Structures are given as structure tokens and as C-alpha cells.
Length: 318
Image (cartoon, rainbow, N blue to C red; front, side, top):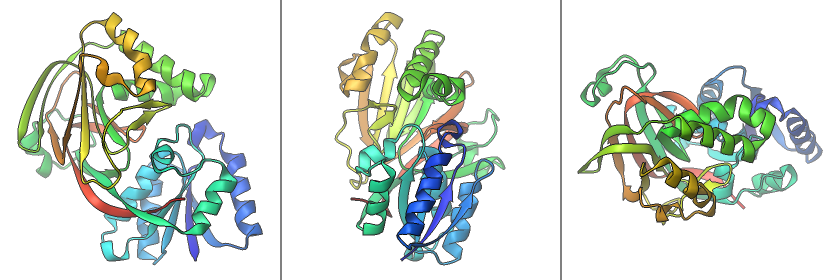
């Protein structure tokens, strides 16, 4: 078996290079046949993954965090040729291993390499999102024909509202100086205090919803949100569904009081939370909070369409 590795050197605030050297050393020691590319800028992993599919690689390995995994997956799907789509392996060297937690892939390098070389696989659902690359302020019906339309694929979740603000702060200086857990928690508290509720119109399959005091909307396949935060849902990796979690504001104090429940997994006890399941979600534009974050990075703007692709990707697991 031959492996094509895509390494993101800025994962974990650029503190992952020692792990990368260890990965190379272990693979060479085990006489594994592999090649690799190192990303230099955003979306390089998409291009490298796309090219690797066309070059005939059977296994592509994302070496980075959830954002790197997202970009590698996008390259796999942009290349088309589903019958030739390579298997995905993951060697996590990023910050918050949400993808690994969900699929029980170890984060210790030695153990992760053993899983990779073991070659056991399973099919999982993947999310597809269509959005705008620039904040154009257009309605949903203009999305499909807009010149700034972008298509990405994700494995974890999409956030609108508070989520992009948290990600921007956490990915900036907060995690760098405070670490994963405290950095994300601090970014959450500061973002929440300064956040004003939003109006949002969405459609889930054939049902329409209007939120007037929305704090955050999460659409996902992965119940792990970030840095230990999680949603206690009935979602499964291959059930052909998305979960849609809406959080509406009752009071700032109530939200602050319920933050521990995000880590315990029982946030649904907060009376402003609602969990729905569906296969397709359409989100209208909001001028106050138009940003979209998915798989840990803020990448674009509303309006957006999200759908699930059932059992579309083969990943290597324990």
C-alpha cells in the first residue's frame, strides 16, 4: 500500500512540526512507501488532494487538524470519479481532534500510524455546503448562479451566528496563549457577552423556520463541536442525516449558567435549545452575522445550502 500525505505546518498554531518529523521517522523506519506535500496557504490541501486523486493514489492522509481534513475531503470530492475515490487516513496534529473523537481514531502518533497501516475502513456520510466567498448580501434564490458561489465538503459541522465569532478569536491569539480548552472557553465567553441575537430564516427539507432571537445554528454530522464541547444527539456516522441545533436567547445569565452543559453533552436541557434532524438545509442571508464557519475555520458568507451525502467516503479506522 502506498500513501500520499498532505501536511499543514500551521496546524496547532505552528507547534506541530515535531510531530511531523516523528511521523516521517516512523514511516521510514517501517519502510512504508509514501510521498507528501506541505501546504503553504489556505486551500492548498484542496489542490493537493485533487491532484492526488487524478494521479491515482489509493490512500490520501490528512496530517493536520479538522480544517485540513475538511480541505482534503473537498479535494477528493471535487475530483469526481466516485468509483476511484481514495480512502482517507488521518494523522491528527492539530488543536481540537473532533473528527478523531467521533470516529475513535487515536491522536497519539504511534497508535494512529498503526491504525493507518492496519487498513480497516468504514463508509461515512459527508456534508456538502454551497455558500458565497464574499459578503454580497444576496438572497438565497441568487446563490446557485452567483459568480462568488463556492462548494466545499465537510465532515464535522457548520456554524452560523456565534460560532464564527468564537472560531475567529480562538484560532487567533486565544488558543496560542491559553491552549485548546481555556482558549476556546475564553473565546466563547467573550463572544457571547458581546453578541446580539439575530433573525434567521431557514428551511429544513420541506419545513420552514423563523428564528427571532437566535444565538447560534449548528448543522452537523459530528456531535463534537470544539475543544470538548458536544451535542448529545442520536446522529450516526452513516445514517444519512444531519442534526440541526438552534440556540435561542432567553437571557445572558441563563446562557452563561448553561455553558457547562455544552461540555457535559446535555445542553438540550437549556430551554432555548432545539434539535431537529434533516437531509437538506437552506439558510437565508443575515446582514448582521453573515459569516459561516465549518470544521473549525471561518470560510465564507450566507446565503447557504447544506446537504448530506450518504456513505460517500471511506475512512481508515481502528
